[in-house]
Amino acid sequence: MFIPAVLRWALSHPWFQTPPPRTGGHEHFGKEFVNGFVERCGRECGSTGEGDHLKQQHSVPEQQQKQQQHFVLVNAEQQQLVVVQQHSAAYVNAGATQLTRNMIRTALELTAVSIVASIRLHVGPIKLAGSGSVGGRLIGGRRAGGRVMLSGGGTRNPTLVARLRTLAPELTWLTTEEAGVHPDAKEAMGLAVLGYLTLAGSCGDTLATGAQELSVLGKICHPGVGKGIPSFPKL
Image (cartoon, rainbow, N blue to C red):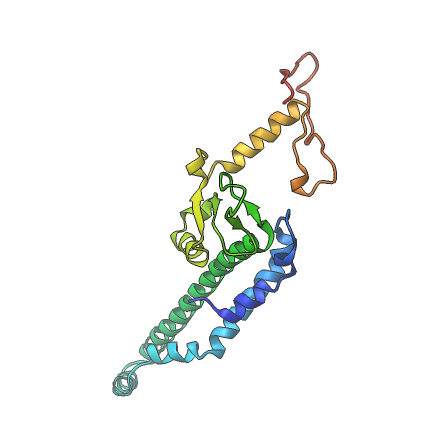
């Protein structure tokens, strides 16, 4: 289960209110953010009594404890250490496993909620293609129809995709594969296009990236004296 208090704390980060274009890097979600996230997860799990629940779940019944104590008294001190280690490990491992699951689930919920919130807050309203000039469906601030293309490793996470569809059922959630681009190939294809534009002397960015003016991106390093590079037509 995800931890609501930690989710609210994470969503309060100013970056989520920043209008696009934007990129979340280590300067926003680096070591400091991760440490705060982990610490709050541990604190919240403890404050909700989950630790006590785990302790009860993995505690040894009273009669069994008496038998073990008798066993320890009869046997050598090394046997006592084994009994203590066994039950301590069971409790510690169970608690750590549940906490890890809660942290991962909270991180997933943060991803899903922030995606849907950003679409509704920043994308629209945008008229859907072919929806007509009057009464067309809109996406963005209001709940309406639309199509979202997913790419990257997240497309292979069924829980994440299911949460997106649950949080925003008015949207159609697809992967870029529906458009002929493998979800894992988007970055490679994008860089190949940018490289081609640079060699062709064409602008490789748009104002949608946040650039103040259009420009040719990158730097061309020539292979050496007497070695030319092929010419590319401008687009």
